Amino acid sequence: MKEYRLGYVLARIVIGVSMFGHGLVRLPKLEGFKNFMVKNFENSMVPEFLVTPFAYALPILEFAVGILLIIGLFTRQALVLGAILMIMLVFGSTMIENWGIIDSQLIHALIFIGLLLGINYNYWSLDTKLNK
Image (cartoon, rainbow, N blue to C red; front, side):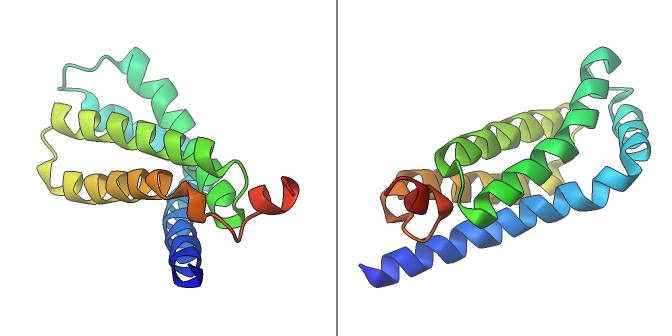
């Protein structure tokens, strides 16, 4: 049982650090990231009026999901949000035919789903401490 709890916390933290890092590096250059996204999608079926708000929101959501997973607060909700973000990113990648990035997005999605399925092992977390 202790090994499962340890494995869970390590997996939760590593995916949290990945999301945190994705958001952290994009936040200071949010306008540039938005412009990059709009340019990538200019020849796709996704209209700019959808790309722009998503491009602004994505780094903020990645950052927030990352922090929540690292500290283990609202873990279930953060995992669901992370999986939903991956669904949206996979869809976007298919729209611009960026097949190379989908592997990474699918791996992230599988980790989110695996952690969600094993949520009962989320012992070392603020969720556990606050719910005692």
